[in-house]
Image (cartoon, rainbow, N blue to C red; front, side, top):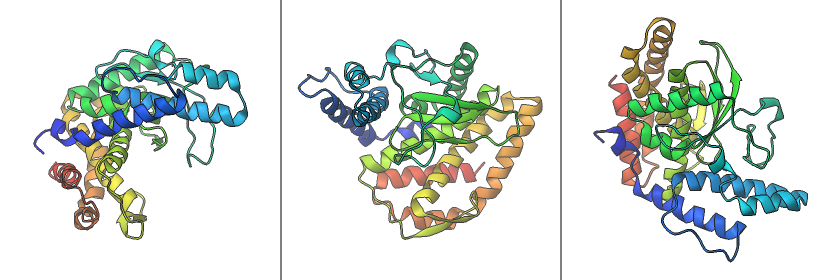
Length: 302
């Protein structure tokens, strides 16, 4: 893996996006003809929003909302998305306290729907700048396919703990706190898009990871199943590679913040190599195995 493009390029993921999008559209709109051409990663992401919204409406007996999703397989995103360096993105800023919790996710989540409003202009601008920052560092392909919907949550100060997450039921969607700086937002976008990428890669390659084997996570300071350990050993190295690339273009408090972050991650990652090698033995697809190993090795070399 010589370049980031090589790292993220995995043809089975493209096939997964197309096939699952077609199946979702056929489920929501039975009998309709699929649009010509290959479904994109954005189609795949938005189709999952439509599926979740339509299912919730059906369970609630809300015929009007269900019909809206049938008529909008893109969950309405096409008319309110913004242009960015990686393509059109949907940027929303829902109130965290209003986000539902349900059996589909341990964390709060948000589904695009008829009441969705785009984020305020300054947040859309912040997001566009963050996507551009990530693209300049070589992560454009990752964010193009795996960070299609961005849900901005709490505004915090530089140095405060920032919570972010993704859920497997809404691939291509990321949820995150933010500070008023596109570089920090880009770092966290890369982290969560990395989780979405790995979920898709595991599904696309038919890789099933045993949940009986556990490894010590320096980030959680606890033993974690191989699935969570491999996710951490993929997503955090990606943020390290981005941070190292970006440091020379930053100054002042931001430079000090990112330097401290990179130093912290180097320390945490340093002891994971032996366990990571053992965890990778659980991955039976060579293409995925090599990509996960390459990301860790590149980060360890920083």
